[in-house]
Length: 232
Image (tube, rainbow, N blue to C red):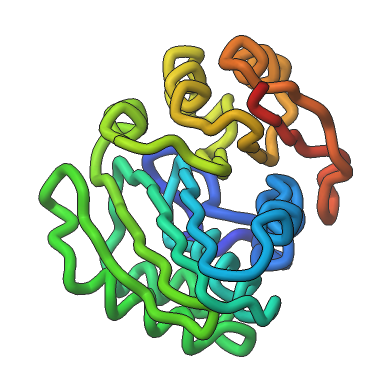
């Protein structure tokens, strides 16, 4: 299938996501892969507070999929902090164009995210905060404009789960370098998880060196396998 030019990140000559079913792919690889359902269930009744980290915000595809995932679960009183990073932020218009292919499925979520994103100054490096109110509770998006290692080092609290969603190691090796993976390990709670689509040996070894027990899970679509890590 030919990839439309607007879906390709020109900085890495790679598409932002799978062009077939990117929302369901995200749920399988990242949400089920990081064990979010088990994490939520283990907390029990009452207010639930979670912290998620993401490397590679892109057009916000994972965030949109996560909002849809949580809305469909029917949970309530969740306070979710979502820390992400983007070195090459796109315009709100391009974000809307990229996400538009999912409009029939998650149109209101796209509109909500684009409205919030339109307010921030993407030319200004550092943290930008947005709050998205949903039926399950409130998601606070902390978006770092800049380099991924700087974002991880700037975190004051460790994460319950990490979505490692930068472009592949061959296209964007800096976001998979050992120094960054070690920092992610340091900013992950004991028993916390990470999930990623790549099964590259260097990534697996880097995550293991960072303190994760790493194993393969079945992939999605044409991908045979993906990785899940648990912080020891």
